Length: 302
Ligand SMILES: Nc1ncnc2c1ncn2[C@@H]1O[C@H](COP(=O)(O)OP(=O)(O)OP(=O)(O)O)[C@@H](O)[C@H]1O
Ligand SMILES: [Mg+2]
Figure 1: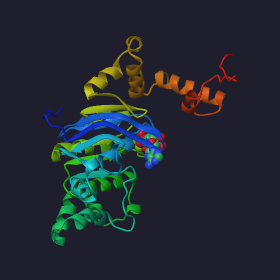
Figure 2 (figure 1 turned 90 degrees about the vertical axis):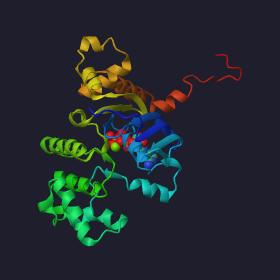
Figure 3 (figure 1 turned 180 degrees about the vertical axis):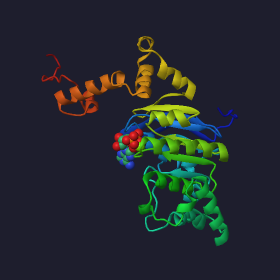
Figure 4 (figure 1 turned 180 degrees about the horizontal axis):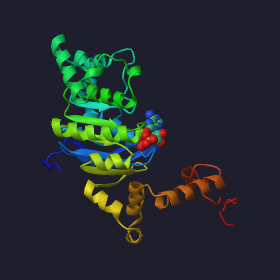
């Protein structure tokens, strides 16, 4: 594991985000250190992408702060944000390539938009980035002509175009077959080593997570359950069932998620919620806010 210097490159403190009155992130605190790969994991809808979008400045927090390179990005104006954005690259879930442009043109785009480099220099830069992701021979193809795995590589080359210090990935292996997905994981590991970038990777694929992470953060329903080293999570994953049953519910829940077990606290919680909703005909949160028994008399005596 990378040794950790004192100052985090990303520092999130007590981040709260609500959408239409619903709390989606509930007091998230997370530090990411230079050179490490931090994997943010958690079930569908737990808030992973929302957390990532706060780090890239797309969303503003309702409470709390997000510091990057020592600056609170939630207080920056669009100009300030754009300066910070040049220091990081983003690989979106879909790859988000422009279909009307070749792979090379896609990779060149950020250089054309954000630098004054001469065309020949941009050309060389694009070739270097495409070589890094193993796509140099495919430079002149269009996105429609390449596979899903190659699209991810192209998206990654574009994310690398401005030599970022931080790389953000949202579900890098989503929609890929297991072998292609493992190849992308390996590419992420290689690039991190070669370029000394800091990476934040959102994923719910546990094989990926354990391959690429230095540290891992487990989100559940907008709360941060645990931030720890990969080895600590690996130990929890491998804890035998009889020992796990003696652990606090929260640790059992993380263990179930890491192992993908079909039985455990997540399943029990889901079953209880769905059953209650089915019986009572509405979301459990709404039902819990309504008193179960309402007095029909003014004095409240029943
Ligand atoms: N712009 C938005 N407006 C309203 N609600 C939103 C918005 N973005 C996200 N949400 C809600 O926030 C919650 C968390 O969503 P988010 O996309 O962060 O989850 P996720 O962990 O990335 O899930 P997945 O694994 O399915 O990608 C969901 O309930 C979602 O509906
Ligand atoms: Mg998501």
